[in-house]
Length: 367
Image 1 (cartoon, rainbow, N blue to C red):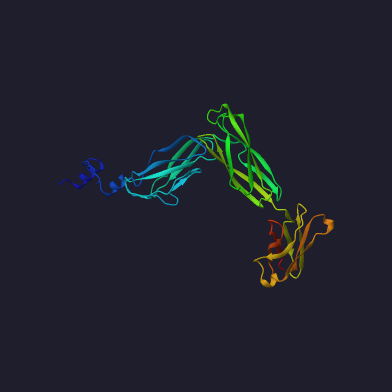
Image 2 (image 1 turned 30 degrees about the vertical axis):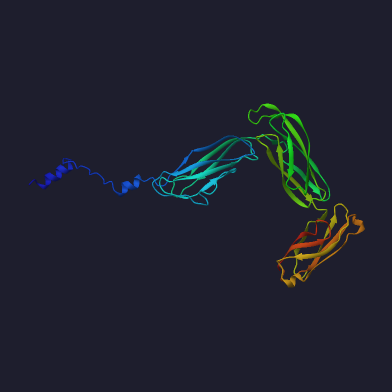
């Protein structure tokens, strides 16, 4: 037996036999490292619609496969997101086993678009490292062009008429509009005025070409209802590729009976005080009309406080020079009032303006 000191010296000098490292078992840790989890693969990797007409809605089927080794779960609400112009109908399945494939239909609406279009469909799976982005590319050709973009008649007084002309161009010298249909034929009358040959920039090559241009006149009916109307024109043409084009009609018809001022402003009120404010309800066209009733509608006051408020109306004095009525809003301020707010509802016999209203606003100062 060697002395302990000798062993200690040998160990200190590194003279002991080398220790051979043992291989690590390829058990659960190695298997976990080899797992890829759920993984999405798309075929094709992008959607290329190429050159399409701006009246088309095109679609393509994309295969979505789980090439991972764990179940892929795609959230039904937020799992598939699209940018403007693209849509993806509901998938048949949102849970895919490893190796399983589901078809996804990508649709692109080219209407009202032109030129190069780059859109995206983003698919996110639970447990995936990053979302998969599917590029959707196309070049939209505006074969039929509404030069003005839409038929905007602007703001028109009730009872008046108005008209606007729009120009529709095609891609060939013999192009013409054959028919125009208004979605609101109770408001708009449409007439095709004629076609002539003009120059237009080719949307594909950028060169100037000779094309047919049809003039269309859109007119508002005198009895058009009050308010904003956003309608549609369907334009039918002799272009076999773009046989139909749609554009908008827009108009705001302003009622003849007006309120001046538009808001009953009471300002700051004092408890125990009184208030009285008047507004003028008049005809912009000096047409005679009657006020049948005036109501104050509010949810901010108790029944007792509402009983302290009165409304009245009388014809405008001859010195005013307008045809109409003066409406007066008056009352007492109780200790329980905090705010006087609501609507002054005025019932008239004016055509198309049976009910008009003005907002009421006032605050009660607290002692």
